[in-house]
Amino acid sequence: MGASASGAAQDADEEARRRLNAYTYLSAPERLEHVAIMRVFCGTLLADLAVPDIMAKLRQAGGSAAGLDADPLTVRLEQLVQWGNLLRSSHMVKASSISEYQRSRSRYQLSKLGERIQRDADGVLAEADAAREVSNELLALVERGLRELADLVTAPGGIEPQDGLERVSTLFVQFTEFADSIRDFYAYLGQVLSRYDLDSAEYQGFKELLLDYVEAITEDVAFRAPRISGALDTLLPHIPALLDRLDTHAQGLVGLSPQGENRMEIRVQRSRGRELADWEGLRGWFSDTDGQGSQVDQLRDATLRALQSLLANAKRMLRSATGEMSRRKDLLRLARWFDEAAPQDAHDIAVAAFGLYGARHLGISPATDEVVPAYTSWWTGPGVEVPVALRERGSHAQRGRASAVEDHSAQKQRLREAARQRAVARAEAADELRSASGRFAEVRLTSAALGLLLELLATALGNAQLRRRAGTDGQGTEGFDLDSARSEDAELGIRLTVRRTAGTRTVLYSADGDLLLDDLELDIGRISAAVDGEAEASVS
Image 1 (tube, rainbow, N blue to C red):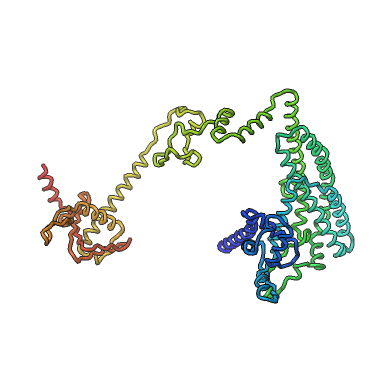
Image 2: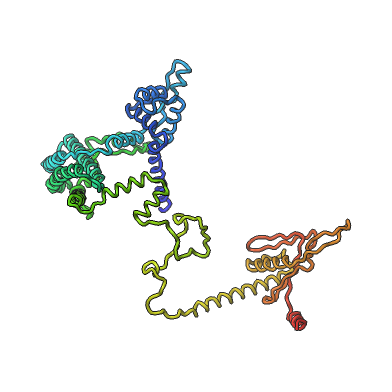
């Protein structure tokens, strides 16, 4: 179950990535040319176009893409195919000559995703900053349609399927248009009311807009919402049976999809109103079904916030008109100074206007293991943890009663036990090495024994003396004298002697791997107590 869920999530992410790639042409450096090409395809229905046809339409439309030749235009088209906005046509090419075939063999047609994105992009370019009127009259039609549909569905014999299909489709088209107009208008209203520099003329216009237009919309929605909710409460118990009856009468694309073992899965987007979720969404717009508030409640809250913003602008202008201090002109003058100033002058202006000096690292140094060069900017440099006392009170001084001395006896006991265990492990490794001396090829050392052996070997090779040897040509050569290369650990009572023997190969087998030593022999022995006693006597 976990693997299947992970695979489904990866497939969903890949599908989302593929769809989002289709928006890339809107941000590419050649986006104006790409938009012009997509408009050519969106102006036709189910038509495949060759490069010469597209060039002719681009020249006829004019604009930045009118001067594209065949080669750069082909590059743009192939890029749109790669992003998923266009498809290569599979239609047969009929040509009377080779040159005509070469001109017409590459034909393209519009993909569904590309058409949808270009349609939305054209809508944004044409009407993004415009104030869209709210289709308030559609709300009355929605109320009337719901009441009539409820009466017909609850009547004996029910509603005729074709009549019900027409009424459901009309009802959801009207509601969708009304909801979209509400959303667009309030988005525009929020953009306008976010400004705090409205002059008297602008304020007068927006005041009339809010007090007259918005209030009328809110009152109409508040008046009709209870009636629509009542009609939906009456209608919703009969919706499943109504939808089954409509599907039996006209299944649309769902009924045309192939069935059986060889069926091809086709994703069908049903018309609005043909699914139970559409009716639940319609009910949630006018009634609080999930405890989060209905869209009518959100509309009322948005209108209240808009009136509060308008009131804030009115207070500001009243203070300015009565002679109180208004900083609008000063701030505009300061903004003009910043816009016209050189970089260094802008820093000086910021210091003079706001007292914002350059950032400095004061009082706290970074961690000792972090080396921060002096030229590192505070913006990209590592953060420094500020103590709570310094952050809240601006002082390192401790307040309150001194805390009791912490008891570390348990920690000391754990450290002693850990040291004892390490000593025991090293003693066992030394015993293992002494027992394996002279027969390394027959045993496999443990990791601890090999580690101790490598430690002794490194010390022995470090103790090897460099001396000059007499060569056959009478000249001296330097080399390592390994006859005296040895190391020992008095605590463990172990001694390692290393000898150089030409042609000798010593192999050490261990749990961590095999170690091959060329021209070296190893001898491991015990340090006797008598030798230690003699050494102490000679020293004394």
